[in-house]
Every structure is written in C-alpha cells, then in structure tokens.
Image 1 (spheres, rainbow, N blue to C red):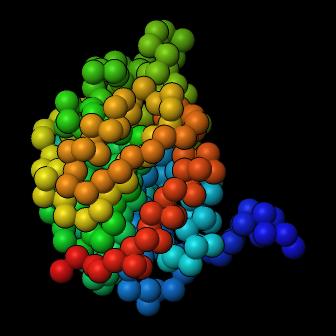
Image 2: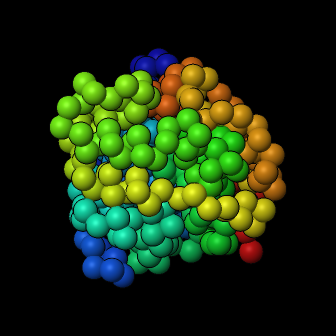
Length: 278
C-alpha cells in the first residue's frame, strides 16, 4: 500500500460513548477514541448546529488525529447532537458549555489535554483555556477578530437577531442574508432542534475573554473565505503564544480541507517536544 493511500485510510475504530449529567440536570453525550490511559488526549468541541459526528468524524479530523497516534475525546454540546436540548435560553451560552466541558474532563479523570474547538466550540475552548491550566496546546478554528470585537462569534457580520429569526421562521425562503440562510440550511441538514439553537443564539457569548491568561501555545485556523473569521492574525496576536494559518474554504467547509487536519495534527505533535504546563 502506498504512503498516500495509507495516509488517507480511515481508522474506523468505534468510540466508547456515554452520558453524564450536568450540574443543572442535562444529559450530555460524550465519546472517546483510543487508549483511555493516554495521559494527554485531544479534546474536541464542535460548532453551532453541528455535533461530534458532523464536525469531527464526517470531516476526517478524528481519523487524522487517530492516525497520528492520538486518543480523542469529544462532547455533544447541550442543544446539539445526542445531548439534551432544552428550549430555555437560560440553559445556554458558551460560558455554560465551558463548564460542561470542564466537568467532563473532571469526570474522565484527565489531568492534561490538548484542546481543539471550532466556531462556537472555539469560543468555548478559549474560555476553558483562559482558566484551566490543564490545557497543554490549543487550536481554535472559524473565529478571528470577532472574538476581540464581539466577545465571541463575529456579531458584526451576522447579527444575533437575524440568526434567531432565521432559525424560528416557518418560511426559510424569507431569509435574505445569505450567510444566515446558510446556517439555517446547515441546521436542517444536521437535523438540529431549531428552537434549541435559537435559545443558544440568544445567549451567544458577547463579553471579553481573558486571552492574556491563556498560557499554552495556540494555533488559529480558518478558511480563506470565512466571513466569520476576519483578521485571524489579530486574534493570534492577542494570545501570548500563537500563530495562524488559512486554507481554502468558507466557514462550513474549511474544516474538510486536508490542510486543516494536517496543520492541526502537526501543531499538536509538536507538544511532545515541549514541557507540559505546570
């Protein structure tokens, strides 16, 4: 078998999965691939209207990490995938999801981990990394200077009210903003609960994140045509130790580009040559 074919071959190992109950009573689904004794797994957090399956499995990211010898942990965020999806906005927000992710890490007994988040999950990951010294390396994708200007997903490009209205309308043809219409289509494609997503949109993080408190090396990735990830260089510059890179694609498809997985696995592989956070 040639090296190129071998590199593209799926790993196809079945994950261990389970549920845990959040501190406010929601049942949340998690997945784990690979050696449970791995002292530093890669922890993934998906984006808005996505799930562990659509953001990480279907795009080949889990396979790429497994081929690189990494064990992987992923969580379906509240309102997404196979986790509970209440319709009360008070149950949502990236800060709330950051608590869920840290609770999962505690439950699994993980003492150090590399963290990889996309879009909404990137905001969650920044919040976790700003307060949790167990994060050894950090990758955030699909976000840029919107984190600095809006506190999270770039609300200058897609206004919160437009997203909420698009998710709740009975007439998708009435959505005029092309980016918002794309998110509505994606939510329908993934079979998401639209009312739960609207509740999350109402609570999208819009406060400053303590980026200067993130002590670990970081990488910012985005598609060249991603309107939600303008000026990723500014976000990288705001982090104490970060670099950035782009690859072809927009917000919903850059993660499928082979360069996305290549850059991510290479960056995480460099951690074996550097000491872990104290």
